[in-house]
Image (tube, rainbow, N blue to C red; front, side):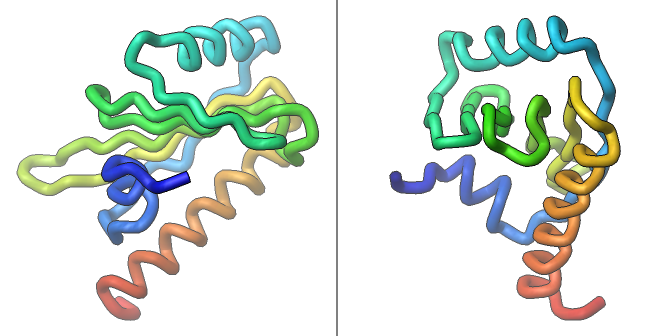
Amino acid sequence: MNSSALTNLLFSSGISTHGYDFAVVKMTELQQMSEEITTSSEARVSKRPNLTFVELESSKIIWLVTRQGHFAHPSALKRKLSEIGKTRIIEVSGVTAGNPQICRVWMEQFREQDAQMNRAFHGNT
């Protein structure tokens, strides 16, 4: 699968990231949210063995929705392009209906990946 411009922007551009917070929700809430995300008319959905990748181009959002077999299942992570003043940032947030400590590990993996990308683009500052 070729990466879209939005995927490249939200995962490998070196734009500063913020957030990494998540909410704990009931399983029914997460299921309803996942259904709404994946069936949106603008959704470009790619299913992987343990993850569903959803691009919402006009909203500048990408969702990663875990599937059975993913260590953080049931959870979803959102990356959204935003602006603070004239500076573009990527807001990272998520939800889980599972173990909050496991979701925190997943979020921290993204935080570290983003920090590595930032260092690659901007040096060790």
